[in-house]
Image 1 (cartoon, rainbow over the protein chains, first blue to last red):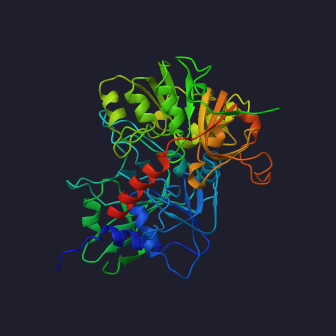
Image 2: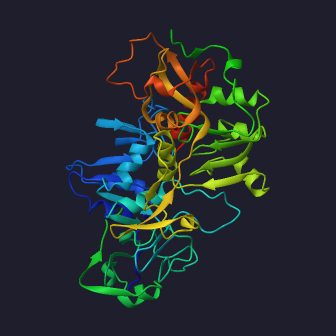
Image 3: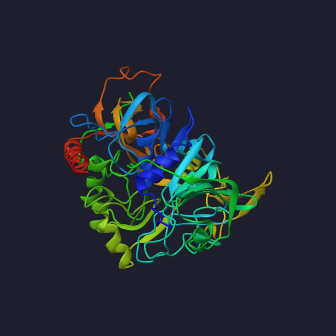
Length: 226
Length: 238
């Protein structure tokens, strides 16, 4: 039996992008989620929100078109598309908290079997605590999706019975994309929809602290070579 | 005649007292009133509580104020950033108090103060360590926590254009916290790129009506070019 091959970050982002539907209003969190926009079907129209006060965020500017006044929440230079708009922070967070975003994609350190999210702090007291908009993003949208590696660098599970790091929100996540699987958070528990080729369910369970359920219609998790 | 424009740097600090709570606009380095901050640094005003989303980058903006030893407390959502060594050192040495507030709650607390409200119930933070010690309430079956208003003695904000009445428009993503902070302090000073004749700003497009503004100061230094160059070179290196 051949060895399974985990997805790389671009492939995880590609897989997440396949679930985006035409007309969606989306917020992409910092880190891996920012890659998603590279892989969204070009035939659909999607509006990106950035918490610092813009709808209709476009791609990174080309050389000579950079503008210091056009930034995203990660303080990177971006562009604005036709139809885009600027607004203040109170309105920006009304968009988030008020449930006006269709989908939110975030990175995370940990997710629990009930969908609790821990993505703002590792509890390290030497680091200056900084939460930003993480809690606000998770609370308002009922379709929050997490992108992360299935395990930590030293191979400890990140999908846990309970998060050990400080929580961002309880019961926030709806779907988890990892380098090994696509998992839905349901009222019955964590339902595995897709697994990478050559990895059996038992092995996936061994890499996961929380209990997993294999969907009866599960599929192989595939992504192009990118 | 109403004329809120001030021209001398020394007129910026008038009436600002040591120990004040000062709201400072900006997200990251975009929309920060850098010259108003310089005026505080050059004054003998100290012992300040600064409410600002971030705590400055390198030794610029709020970080410059921190480095000058003027600040006892920071209230904000994300003081850590690329090259936020000033706040990091002060924090490790226990020389600064930090009040960390989720960003939407931070701006809404300021909005509540400006709108004359006693606070609001929010679902943000429920079930997390940031809810500890806060009044919880179930409304229509959903759990919320009470957040109180955050008012400034002073607000220092940055805008694009102003007229002598203090009407303001902003530039792109530099708007962020500035229009909200403009509503929520006893003394509000706007640093602007340009002062135009009364009537030149389109009433349909004015974002902050002059009623909220006490003083307008037109920038003299060229911080914009400096920041533009820093951000463009970082962008090209990535």
